Image (cartoon, rainbow, N blue to C red; front, side, top):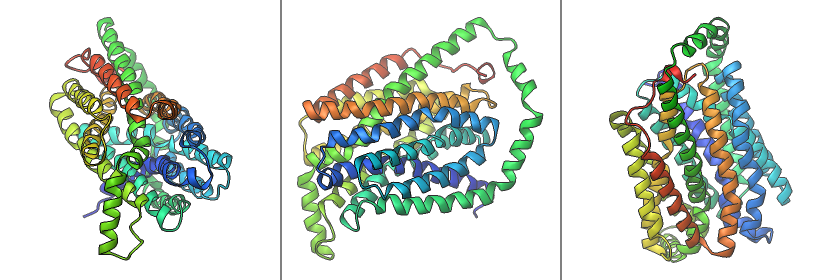
Length: 421
């Protein structure tokens, strides 16, 4: 039975799905359609997506502040409806500058979800590790579906539909969320008027200097690994459709021919198959978050994080020079690590951050994360244009090694949440 509580969590999960889907539709559009339609190189097109990813990071801070000061549920309604409207507007772009402006607007509204949605998830429900992991799986399925949906529409109706139809769906979900949480928005605002002063004062009392030093050390590790992990996540998720377009053409063509023999000839095109292969890898790899969430609640973040970083080192080192079936298997391996690392820093922040400021603290985490995501796009373009993706894989192996070294400095137990306000 779908209770209001379950419906609430489901809508938050759908929001995470849509957030990542909208931010990565253009990755497949650029890789498989626009570079031919507009006569621009892959690296040139990435430049127009960069401001949107900067907005995705920088705007997380005001979004988190507004959520803490006004209403988290209210901000979620703004997210659903705003990102849906801007996605539809982006579908009308006729020039690179117009699509860049549309992606910038999508990034601004997309920035709302992570500091606000994760603050709701970590404050409202117990079993934080599994809740974050389940929510993360939905986000990763959004990453996966961006490649699948966009690849399908490129072959069957055009890339513009990949912005329009999810946009309409997001607006509908926003209206449902507003209807479900209308009363909750009012209660949330009323509670803010009566609560915070005493809680903030209590959080400042009795701070042990040693505890403060430990907190600072863990915080530094969290934000360092957040930045480096973001390089890995953006490089793999954004570039994977292009990587598969270059390296899995043999498999994609074979599957397309096989599907044409089973279905209506001409329907199973190579772009659809590349998108499907990316979707399969993303979807399978996203399940790593459930295992990671379970282990976080049982053994803590240090050992889990070290295992995930080690996994990435192995597979990134193995990837250069590979094609077709072997490349597909190794890509699944490093995507397991890339997705598996996502809930770990969110888990640590959720355990250390005070409830009153949690959305703002998550906002700072995502400003770091998504600003690095934006800066990674020029890196991908530069490396791909000059040395190819083999060089990128070696860079990512070094990045995973940096994470492993940093995580080795984590304590076995995290500092208590009360002093983290």
